[in-house]
Amino acid sequence: MAGKPILHYFDGRGRMESIRWLLAAAGEEFEEKFMKTREDLEKLRKDGSLMFQQVPMVEIDGMKLVQTRAILNYIAAKHNLYGKDIKERALIDMYTEGMADLNEMIIYYPSLPPGDKEGRLTQIKEKARNRYFPAFEKVLKSHGQDYLVGNRLSKADVHLTELLYHTEELDSTVLANFPLLKALRTRVSNLPTVKKFLQPGSQRKPFDDENRVEAVKKIFIK
Image (cartoon, rainbow, N blue to C red; front, top):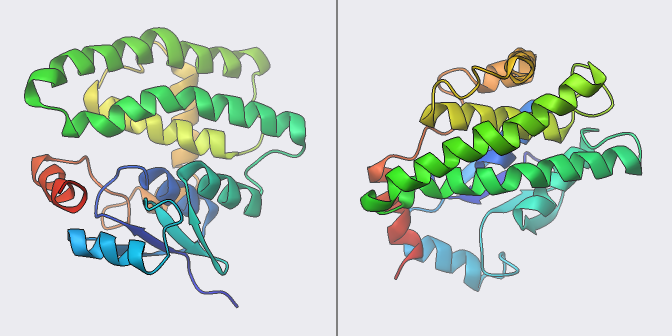
C-alpha cells in the first residue's frame, strides 16, 4: 500500500494551497516537507526531484509530480472529482481556468511592494465583483443544482470555495450580492472532510504575512 502523499513546498499558501484543499476535500491524508532555506530547494533540484527545477512537487502513488494543474488533475481524477464524462470534464476545466486569473492575483498580493498593494486590491475587488463571481452565480442559477457541474462535487467546487474564502479575507463584503455562491461555500464547507480542514490546527495555511513573505524570498531569491 502506498504511503501518504508528501508535499514539498515552503510553509505558506502559494501554489500548494489549492493542492492541500483538494486532497483534504478528497479525504486523502498527506504529509508536508517544508523548504526553509535556499539549500533545501537546491537539494531537491540536484537530486532530480524537480523536472523543471520548480515547486510545488508532490510525491504520490510512486510518482514525483510537478506542475500545479497536473497535480490537481491527477488528484481530481483519482477521487472522482473530475466529472462523469469528457463534457463534464471540459466544463470543470473551463470553470477552473476561469478562476485562475483572480487566484493568481491573490497569490501574489502579499509579496507586492507596499506602494502597489492598494491598486492591486482595487483590481481584485473589481474583477471578483464584476467579472468572475457574477459568472459563477449565473452558472448555479441556470441549472438550480447544488454544485457547478453534474449536481455533484468536483474540483471546480473545491477551488471556487477556496477562492471565495481567500477573496473574503481581502474584501469582507464581496459576496453580499451573490447568494448562490454563499450557499455553495456553506455547502462545501459543511462536507465532513472540508469541515475538518477548516478547523484550527489543520494543514490549511493562514494568509501570508510580511514575515512569511520575507522567509519565502530567502528561499527563492538569490
